[in-house]
Image (tube, rainbow, N blue to C red; front, top):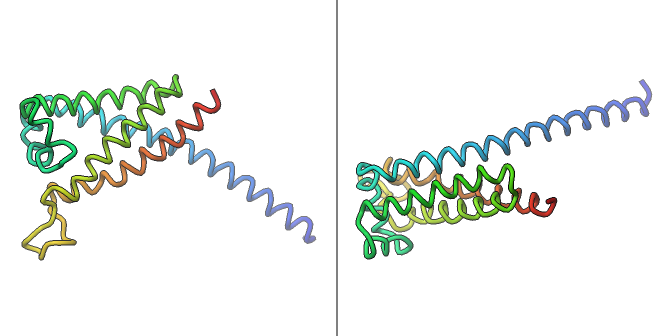
Amino acid sequence: MTTTAKLSDTRYSATRINALGEKISTVGLYALKASTITVLGWIGAMKFTAYEAGAIEGLVASSPLTSWLYKVTSVQGASNFIGTTEIAVAALIVLGFKFPKAALLGALGAIGTFFVTASLLFTAPVTEASLGGFPALSVVPGQFLLKDLVLLAAAIFLAGQALQGTAKS
């Protein structure tokens, strides 16, 4: 095989690998949108139950970003407000499949949502004292909140994608 043929085969393989990478990235983007919608919608809907309102009370009360809610409404009212916000953000991301500006608003809402929940890692009691404290995280709320760092990164990525989508429309 000549050097030219080897280079040609390499370029062909690189082109095919690149095309496969683009297809996988597209599937990944849709999976990221669907999973973000599912998380926000499902957890948002749970906020309307007394069980969930009670479960988040300590977290909400511990944060300077959210504790004010209990000054203006009840535990259930605050939970309902948070749930409504999460469901609205999920709906905007869904609408974003058709309307790029809605996708951007939804992604920005998701950034805000996951920024607030990730910030709870610094305001709520998240370490496990029986294991010596930091860096040992309690299962709840520590490990439960840790996932919000990934969700925040996903929301930032979706915002970038949404910005690109609005530029094309």
